[in-house]
Image (cartoon, rainbow, N blue to C red):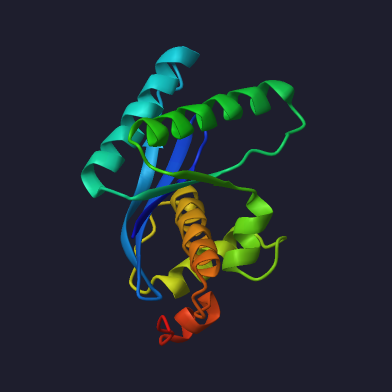
Length: 175
């Protein structure tokens, strides 16, 4: 299966595409969609949605995973981030992809082993789990982590015995 992970933000939305086959993960692509900070809110949301549309059309994912938003200290920032998430959810849903949302703590726990991992720890584990992957930015690393988390959760739900730790060690196979 091919999974697109999305880390929504109004200024920058990270995206990452991975393949999960036979208990193995492989990197396909990653990057960042930027909106024009000079544009009005509606125009910026359109830019994000169209950028996600291009990623989906280019890489043909079968699943989408989106990071959930936690409340920030600034209510206006939280609202704008929620709107960016809405654009990401809409783009994936309109492409007829099943969409799953994950809290940042769940993503970190799935990828690093602790829900309070720092950004650098997440990026380091993403590099370890996807050897040879050139990560475009911290936002793209977070998006790849969301995709990895989704792959792990699908494996668990499907009863696969492989784990991300075994994948990192380079040898888990679906039983």
